[in-house]
Length: 85
Image (cartoon, rainbow, N blue to C red; front, side, top):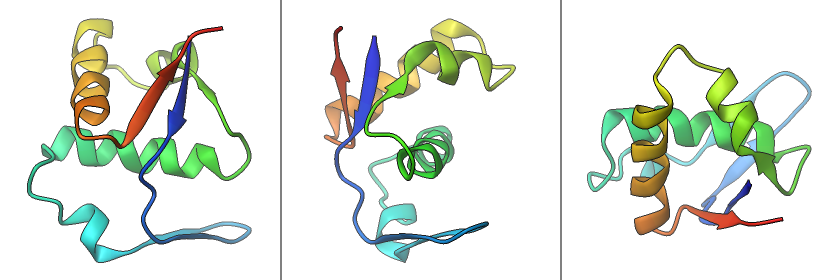
């Protein structure tokens, strides 16, 4: 299964940094955990249209259950879309 980042707002990538519009990080509908995961996903979306769920699960010490809960939150707010291969 893959994830596609949908609602990127204004994101600028350069060689070593990523800049996001403050509105994205200040969205009060998102938990702090979801904001952090969204920043991770946005950093990966520069080079890839789709991000493997396993890559996300392996990038953190969070449990699979917790990570999937946060992904669901991002999906419900239209920040990401699950894509089944």
